[in-house]
Image (cartoon, rainbow, N blue to C red):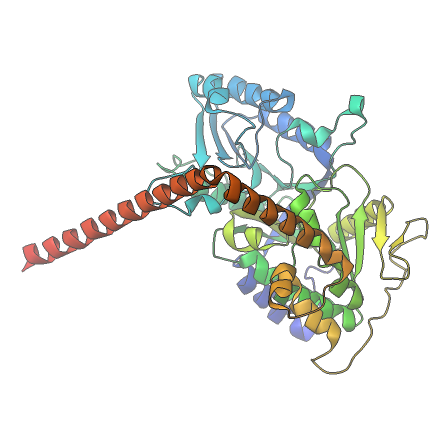
Length: 483
């Protein structure tokens, strides 16, 4: 079995080094990995691991909702804490806003468990709320680790009574040296919010299998996952199949995908047909045309919500985790993914991708905008050939370079917009007209929020200025005392 994603003998070590540097994560051998599909499978495995914990449970998730699923997890954690197991939980303030309150965790805290909230609003940090903890991680006893796109909420199970299907999502269970890396990523998040975790008695990270992988735990402004995604798009030779819940292509990444497609790589993108965040779905659709012109195949999921974040390249490399293909995940959030360099795992993920395409609709250019998936799509179906316009100034490449900002393009009159881009523009027009009407006839409705916002930023900037001034005088005082 080939261990590396791109196994040409002379270039194997070079590719391995390049991937390690891009991701900021070393290749770890000796792991065992299991693919988990959809919420029910995740919750069953996660709860079983928690209930079997003997030493520690570390849970980090963007959304932990106060519903039947969330209470099942909280109660399992409470039971373990009462038995003397060390329990630590991190949840995101924005993710859980309106989903659960601090009181939801009172039983766990009373049982001895510890709970921390990531990045609540703080004075002196007016833009601090932008960075979020978007990870979905569970580590039990330092022996088994899980990472995924799945949050802890009943929404992932759907609602059979209302005819709502479960959300489509993907994650993995891991054994071996990778678990130590996942636990270290949790510990780093924990220490960023207060007192570090106590030292744990670490067992030797014995090999549990034959899988080589990288654990990529990103932090704001590190962009390790972005660099890796770019590199895989550049290195893929035959296939690059992507699934993403909130795709908003930035120009350099879209250009990389378009270049791969023009070189004959079968590039496919599977995205939600209906999204829980309609604005993001509209932004995604506004970028279809340049992708399709470059020969990239775009599919929309026909189920309730597609929330998975996966990639599989050349049947040898695969990625699963919490990172979406957008600026927020790449540059602003804490995310965690696993990049697997194993033929068998990549084969399983590719097989699941083809299953997913069976419940998707392919988007095509005019004269037919939609082609129902009755026409069989498989690994043997060749991608449509991109039209070559010649040179680096081809219209497909130019369109790809400007995909990231269709609204800005319209305002500056830089290009003619296709009909896939009209939705966000119409929505923006309606919202601005509504705001103008409100401002004209009811100015106080607009004025008071602006005043509160200005006061908030003034207060925060003033606090930051005071803190900077205080630090300056402390340094001056320290220098004077040493002289």
